[in-house]
Image (tube, rainbow, N blue to C red; front, side):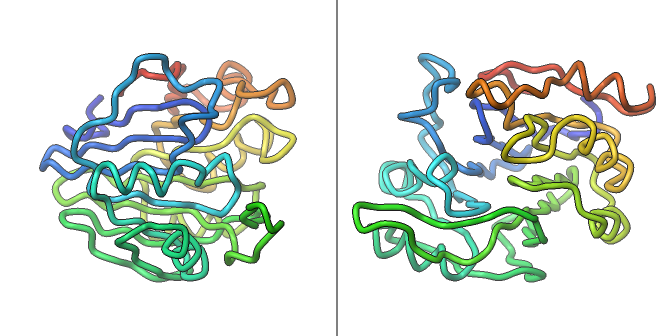
Length: 234
């Protein structure tokens, strides 16, 4: 896929995405593995995972962040309060940032952008404030600009993400119920402007009824909606 310019993106079910750049950087977003019913059976993560990005604190996005970070010597990157939380749970290396900020992760400049969603981490003591939900824009040197929206509803300032960062590829939730569904995601496609769309956060549980086919029916032929399955790489 020419838009990716040598970068490989693998969907690991739900909102878990593995990004491997042509230059050798490896980034895992929202690791939900052990309890993820859509995690591809037998898929083995690469030995080297440089960074783990967390969009927000819900368990279906962070439950495996600490064990994966420990096993792969990864640095966890998240909004400040969530980074502090996972550090307290045992993550040895973290980077706390906030909305609008950019951190340079090797060859990838990562900017934290707004999302509209709740965000609380849970443990045996209950719910805990861990900042707000976010998305990420990844600008790969000599590669694509990738926008991962995280869990979000549709919001008008997605237009600004498109105007500022001009993403080549957008990873968008489409399942509905907890995030936007295909109708809202179709509007988001127009706002963001990416011509390659990687749908996620659908089909994991019965409530997430949105499908790539439903989204594709709502956008023009100039936009490629990738119909992928967990474990597939584009």
